[in-house]
Length: 207
Image (cartoon, rainbow, N blue to C red; front, side, top):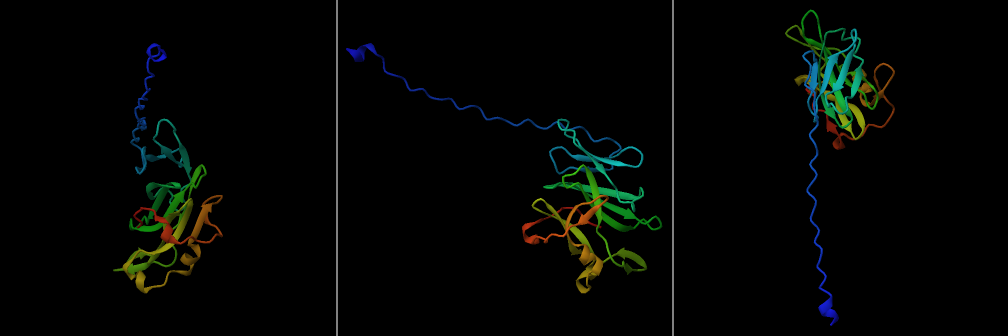
């Protein structure tokens, strides 16, 4: 009798919720006055002229509107070309200075904010320049940027074919190592340099 009065309980089957699709970021178009475009991010970073002779690195994600000041090297004096990329430690800029007499590159710098609000730079070239056909070719070796976890490392790298037969300049060897922010530029800090086998070479084409 009890079975007849109580209908069987039906099993409740859950309906899976539809997957959540992340909204695409809304990116502002780069301005016509852009000096460099760092496109290795969902929304590019754009280097633009700021007030007076200052530069500003702006994120084009309209939701965050991030912005960094750029303390260009004094040696640039308005004659540097800029390229850059976005890394695990934030955007990195490469500044190359050209000799006014020859238009050849005669200095190179790498810049990063490293968690701060201003991109500061460190030189990549040290020592005497090599020459070919009476033309200055720059030093045979230079520093190259690597990202090791949350750390920026500048390591010695050959940049000319003759580098394999020459010793790097002593000043270059002293400058290699871990870098951090200083008052006016990136500075080498007294920390052990990580093994580069666990690091990533920053994909910037160095001069």
